[in-house]
Length: 120
Length: 390
Image (cartoon, rainbow over all chains, first blue to last red; front, side, top):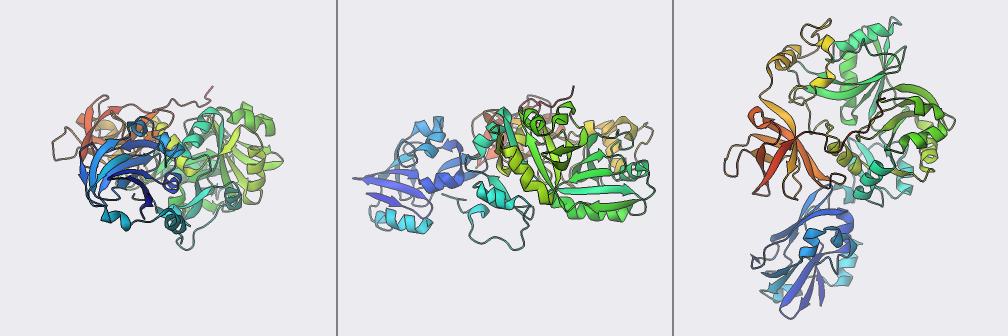
């Protein structure tokens, strides 16, 4: 199941684990990323908390936790090579995996059609 | 994520933004247009800031800088020396000694020694040609009218556009259209026909690379841009890369690194003030704030602009506070410009620090999102200048 937030994060839900990243639209608007900071595994976030930071040549932006949960795993590859997020935002450019705290939060998120409509 | 709806993606734009003569061309080239200093300007083209930056350092980049102000300063007496003397009353620069066909960096100072704007001054024989910052041009014009009208006619050249061609291939590209460009050296200024268009060309720029700035009648600006872009070595470059290029070159951005609250001495721009305007010189002082500036030249300043190299990978940006160690609550300075340097392949920054911390190699700490990140003071530029001086 693939879901999206108004803040341009995506999450792919598999059982009680959600893989989180930023959308193709988001990476396009940001431009070439030059720095990514990810949370440490074990950290817990409430839905909407700033969980990661991305920086392009121009500016820094926070990436929010789309739902509450605990970080299980992070994608070190995008820290080593931030350009991976630009090249493959929905695939190899994933950010972190969350152990889902409250599955009911997922219902409130957008599906792909709704997200596409939002960005126009 | 935050800041995705930055001004450049907002649906409604503030009213009354001006456009340069190249606006339609930017749109056709796929530029992302943003409000900048009252103009709609291209921040980047489809390749993006990183590639545009690297292209400028490896081939040639074409920049639209038509938003900048161009002003002709004409002596009422007909003698160029009178205009030079008049301008010297507003800048701590040797204008009188500037040879015909040469250009020089300058700044308008205020009575407390702060910088009102930085500019280029060219000696064009019968007049001086000034190039000033877009955001300051109205105030500069007023300043010149108030202070110099008795001796000079102040003529804003509103019907001229300004293009910059920058990079190691800039000379080869321009010489194909105007062979005489090859004979120019850094800071020369010539009237050159380029592809049949009468242009005022200076060998200068804001990237640290060799290159040219070309003043062209607005009505011919697009023709000139198209003629230059026809060369496959040339790519259009937006304001985003212009900023990262000038930052790597250690060049100040007015409004960020210098302003009315910084003096030229604090800013490390004393090199631009020639001996004849300093204490003991033939025409010492005589510019606004000369008491403050000459005193600082003699005795130093409590703070100074320095280069800053973050030790870790995170960019350290303008506005970030600097500390002596990782716990001290009192900042000893602040970053004024910073980001990622695509050619330096590292985070690069500049800022002002208290004098005891300004010596090269001093370890300081920058507060980035609540974390103290180590940075080291360093010399600038971050990428060697490649001006054609010989």
